[in-house]
Length: 61
Image (cartoon, rainbow, N blue to C red):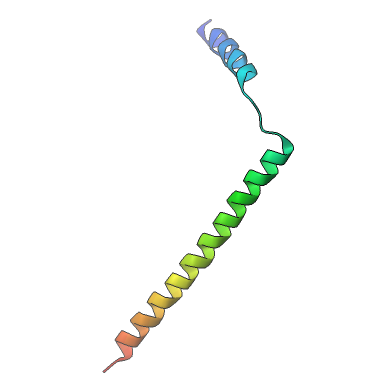
């Protein structure tokens, strides 16, 4: 019985939710994708620089 009450309360709360519009959803998705791509590029560059420095240090006699 408590399970039915729980799902009833979930349904009631879901009606209170303000869902984003298509435009807001598209904007937010673009923000996530572009931020992710920025961090991918940043960490790839950072990794490449660290790798280059370590290679220089290990090959230096």
